[in-house]
Image (tube, rainbow, N blue to C red; front, side, top):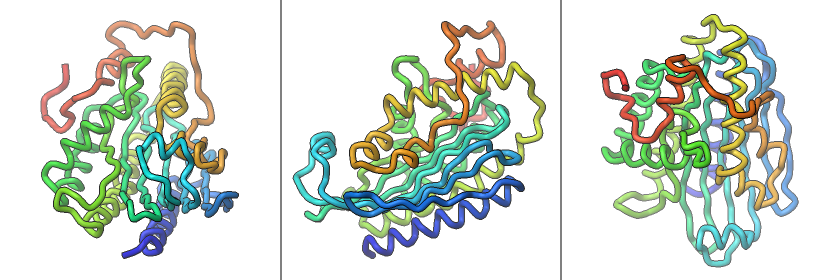
Length: 302
C-alpha cells in the first residue's frame, strides 16, 4: 500500500459522497473546479449551492507536494524534508436551521524521510441541539471506532471536544464528534490498520448525514430560527479562521484559497452583545455546548 493507492481511494470517496448527496438533496448538483498548486500537486473542488436542503457545501479532494514550509516544520517539530499530503475535506451548510452543519476531513501525510501519518475527524454543529440526534450521531461514530479499538472512541471524542472549542466564547463549536491526528505505525498498529480506520470514518459520512437531513429538513421554522442560524454560523466562522489547523495548513502551504475557505457559510451574523432569552431553546443549546457531555447516555442532560 503506497500513497498512490491511498490517493485513489480518496478520489473515489469524493465521487461516491457527491453522488449520494446530490440524490439526497434532490435538486442541486456539484460543480467541479480543478486546480493546480504552483509548488506541486493540485485538487478537485466540488461545490453545491441553493439545493432543496443544502444551501452551500463543498466536498474537496487534494493531493499536494513539495518542500515542507518552515511554518509547518516548526509547528509540527519535523526535520526538513519534502512532503506529500492528500485527503478529502467536507463542510455542508443547510438551508434550514433545523438541519445541522457537518464537517469531515480524512487525510494522509508523508515526508521523503519516511515519516507518515493519517488524520481526520467528523463533527456535527447543530443550530439547535436535539439530544436524540446527538445520541444517534455519537452512537454511529462509536460503532466505527469500536470496530478498530475499544479505546478509540473515548480518546478521539475527548480530542474533538478539546479541538473544536471556541476558547474566546467558552463554548464548543457544536456537539463534537471524533478527531485524530498523526496516527502512524505505533501502539501495535500498522499502516494498513490505520488506513482501514480512516476508510471506515469516510464511509460513515453519507449514511449518518443523510439520515439527519431526512429527519429534520421538513421541520417548520421562522424568522427567529433563521436569525439564530446566522448567529451560530458566525461562531463557525470564528473557529475556522482563528483556530482551525486545516485552514492554517492550507494557507501556509500555498493551497488554493477558494477551496480552503469553502468551509465558510453563505451568510452569517454578529449581533453586538447578543443575549438569549432565559429558558429558551436557544439558551438550551448554549447550555449543551460544552466539553465532556456523554451523548450516548440515555438520561436527559441537565
